[in-house]
Every structure is written in C-alpha cells, then in structure tokens.
Length: 230
Image 1: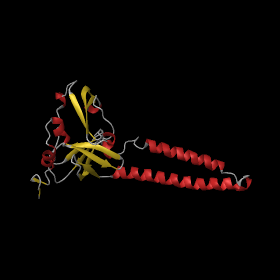
Image 2 (image 1 turned 180 degrees about the vertical axis):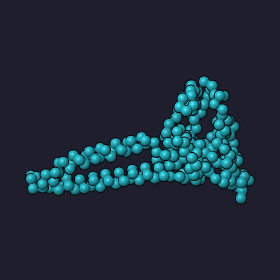
Image 3 (image 1 turned 60 degrees about the horizontal axis):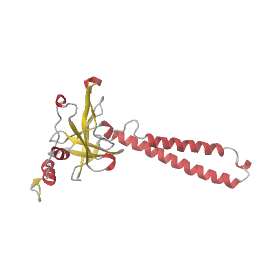
Image 4 (image 1 turned 135 degrees about the vertical axis):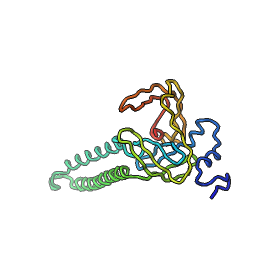
C-alpha cells in the first residue's frame, strides 16, 4: 500500500518523514531519525542508527537507574515514620484515654493512612518490576505517529541499549568516527527534555578522553536534561 498524499510506501518511514518536513539543514535532517521512547518510568529519546530500524538509546531510558524512584522512596519513608509515630501515640489501651473519641478518630486515621501507605508501596514495587521486565516499547516519530519497538540488547558495562523496529525503512544517523571529533566542534542534542517536544540545544565539544575499558567520553556544553539524554 502507498500513502495517497505523497505516493510513498507506508513502510518507508524515511521518505514519508522527509516528504512531510522537507529538511533543509543537517540538524533538521538528523531530527527525522530521533524518536521519543515511552517507558514505565517516563519518557526518553533515541535515534535510528540503521535504515532497517535499529535504535540506539541509553540503558537508563529502558531500565530504571538506581535513583529513579528516590523521591517516591523518600515519601514512603516519611509516610512510614508518620505511621510509626501515630502507632506509638495509640499504643496505650483505649480505657486510659480521657477523650475516647480522640482515640477512635486516631485509630480511623491510622487505618486510612496504613492503607494509603500499602497501596503506594505496592504501586511503586509493581512499577519497578514492570520496568525491569519490559521488552517492548512504544516509540513516537517526529510526525507524532507511534510504533512498537522491541528491546534487542543491553550493554553490561555502558549506559547503552539497542531497540529494533521491524518492518520499516527508517531514517538514520550514521555514527561518526571518534577521531574526527575535535575540541570546539559544534554539537547538537535533539529530543524531548522535561516534557518539551522535539527541541534542539547547541553546544561544543569541550573535551574527549578515553577512560573505562578504552571507551571514549565526550564532554559537551549542549544542554541535556531527562527526556533528551538518549
């Protein structure tokens, strides 16, 4: 089948996106290959690195990092501490309380807050469990269309992951040889940081070093936030 408006095959995402957005700069052309990845723990970004649908992203986009739920865990700890204080206050027999209505009201509050704590903890545990096991992810293209990509591989040593979108010809960004990157060269981060849709931030290569297991690490002044780290 073909898309009537452009006469482009439906499975040719590269031509479909190029026909719709008509990129005129390298950054605009590259943005066609950038995808938004929806996960159990939020949204991230990635990009096609081959015309057959291979997507490179960060491991922390598709698997929860250690600190991803730190704020929620802190809230749970505060809820638990509050419950412990209330239990201590209500630990004496009802008969010793001068105002038994206050005691009864405290017991009702304790039951309600205990239930809220259990539900919040169960929801967090389920979300963590689902995020650890998820193998298929919804991706969103530049034109807003959504497709499903499967997890192909996770790096055991680096913050990298590969997804695969099957059945389509995709736009792609070919990796650059690291030796061609020089200090001061312009770089761009394309993605959806902090919920913003498809932004571009500009910077330069500040430095590049080889560290752990010979990997090349780049430092850049381009602003990168949760949502466009991939």
